[in-house]
Image 1: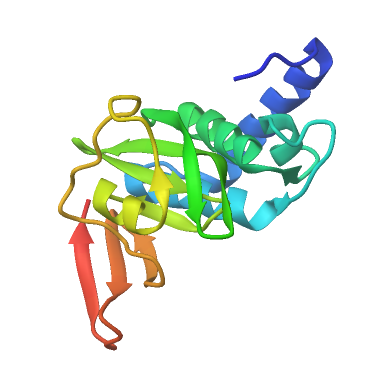
Image 2: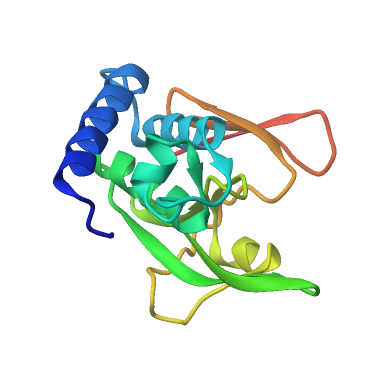
Length: 178
């Protein structure tokens, strides 16, 4: 995580405290906290370039960031919520676009998951992350080997520690307790 001038770091810390106070409620499970943070970052930031686009300040104060800014902001918010997490660095894409990318690894319960607010990817295991064209150096991040994963294109929401999702193009809700 990059170093900011003192005045920007102070403003960023105040913003993080404000966001956490507004979106994290007493008694929330870790997955509910994670989902609230994911939704906040995804909904309040646009992809773009600027002086601070690769850090949390750009994402949370200026509301403009590239992947690294999204990942750093998500990390800072997850840290403030007391959730173990890391920034993953690797490659995203195939075909015409393939380039460096940053996203998050989050620990929910005893398992790790890929989390990417920029790409709208919530709690992927390694297999689904690879199927979504993420690649990384083996051993550089914790293994995300859960049998549970929210694949690309699934409709889902999180509430009360449960993930509710529609799979296989059916209209049946599946429920997973995290």
